Image 1 (cartoon, helix red, strand yellow):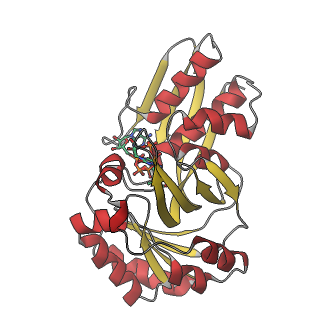
Image 2 (cartoon, rainbow, N blue to C red):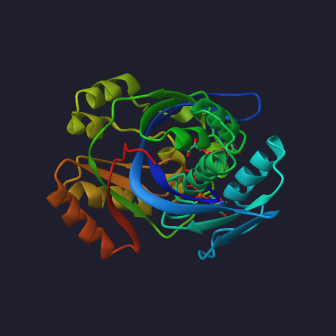
Length: 286
Ligand SMILES: C[C@](O)(CO)[C@H](O)COP(=O)(O)OP(=O)(O)OC[C@H]1O[C@@H](n2ccc(N)nc2=O)[C@H](O)[C@@H]1O
Ligand SMILES: Nc1ncnc2c1ncn2[C@@H]1O[C@H](COP(=O)(O)OP(=O)(O)OP(=O)(O)O)[C@@H](O)[C@H]1O
């Protein structure tokens, strides 16, 4: 097999808590991660030597600044691979959005190269390697629904959660590093009740989940970009059961049980923003 195409899903955070800080500046988190049916297509093809990356989206770097490029380099070095790869990224996930768009492409490259070069890594080994690239990469390798602790790499799979989501990104970019750096732990007044949310998830109670979602990083990003708060309000006006910023933002998602209501909300937001998607939570294999 010389060529593999992988569908790489985006993620949302159904809740995000920060519970401490490591010596190296990384934050200890407790968050509920959920893949959604919004995919990049990543094609990886064997070549004679070197890494080449192609992506039509001008906001996506085509060199070692691309995390998918770095994933390929890491594998070539680690396994002493004689030869290289061409990587083609069909970008559909909004960039710098809080949806782990880069991390999921990197996860896709790791999975693809494991198959192409017959490296025999199991999922845990791929996740361990992925962590060297970024905190969200292990979850992107696992996919589905999970509780993430540590800096995001200690993962406990949760029962698949089924819901409709409207996902909307305002036309601003946010740096994850900068958001974490500006977070003042002692100023957070509202933390999510993570165990309670998981309990609702296990019972398939979308309303219970939606009403209890909290992302502590909103305190930083919404202060800088009030448009996030406006989008959350529009989603609630249009009958979302709950609405939250994903990751470090600026993307906002609304949860729905009813597809019809989600469609009405989606259509309303499309009048207002360019990057709006109607998706489902995704628990399938990729
Ligand atoms: C916001 C989330 O997307 C939520 O899922 C993640 O916590 C961020 O994951 P990520 O983008 O893969 O993060 P990385 O690429 O590893 O780190 C980017 C920067 O965010 C900060 N960072 C990230 C993860 C974490 N648990 N604590 C941090 O403080 C670090 O300053 C780091 O320099
Ligand atoms: N494969 C990639 N896809 C998108 N952006 C990439 C990629 N590789 C590197 N980047 C760079 O990384 C930056 C962050 O993009 P990305 O879409 O991964 O952010 P994000 O969704 O906020 O990630 P996370 O939720 O993991 O913090 C972009 O500004 C871009 O320059």
